[in-house]
Picture 1 (cartoon, rainbow, N blue to C red):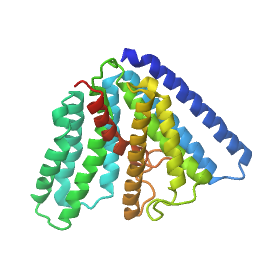
Picture 2 (picture 1 turned 90 degrees about the vertical axis):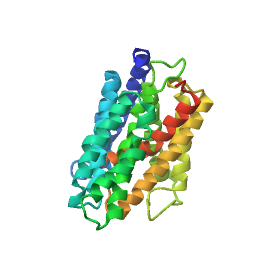
Picture 3 (picture 1 turned 60 degrees about the vertical axis):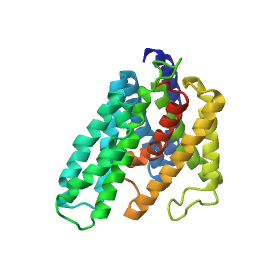
Picture 4 (picture 1 turned 180 degrees about the vertical axis):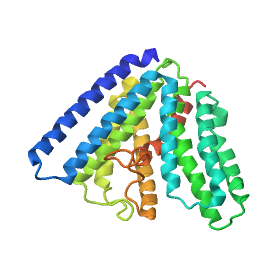
Length: 316
């Protein structure tokens, strides 16, 4: 990844500068409020920015560590997300071995296949083999109560938390003419554009949002926030074309595709949270909830981005 190093350092410098500016603003707001006037919104903002420092550091270190570091990081994220998801699902004693296999067989095999760059297998391992065989393990336990729900929830958890997440490091396996050794920049571009889209949608919604998209699913999401945030994130994606194999117009098109998928991913998983009566998937990341809360947009966008890039640009 030596070819990618100069671009990574520029991105790292820009990220540090942006987070430093955000930290100064947040700390200034806290100081202005004073210790005797605790403001929930300000404290939440500070917690989120502090968490972003940690997440940016982990992501940066994994990029610098190369392919192994990136795959290990996303395997860990996948494990944590799978744990959050399955904690909220319907399970019985008969599912013990199926759950064990999901965590300690399916997940590591999927990421090993990505490491081995075996596209023909990692692209179907979970949707075909795991989805078909894990229910057999549960059914052999002999408990038919809520069988359909138990099986479907486990399958959906594997698809969202393992299969989709694995498509982020899978970007490293693409071979694009003239872009050799810089594949990690595709991950950086995807994460930056999708995550900034979330931030910009939230900001635009707060500033000008009036018309709610799905009030009973996610009351904070508005048409004005979605359109404004996605438009700005699309412009950002086009501006960052220099770290991708895309032209500015192509980068804008790809940014539009991934931000739309990211928006729908957040909406779908918000519906799941409402169904379970929870605000966040977890509490591991201060100010951000759980890993799924941070990755909901990325997990829906990653497979689409991977396959579009592979189909139109990859030589493999």
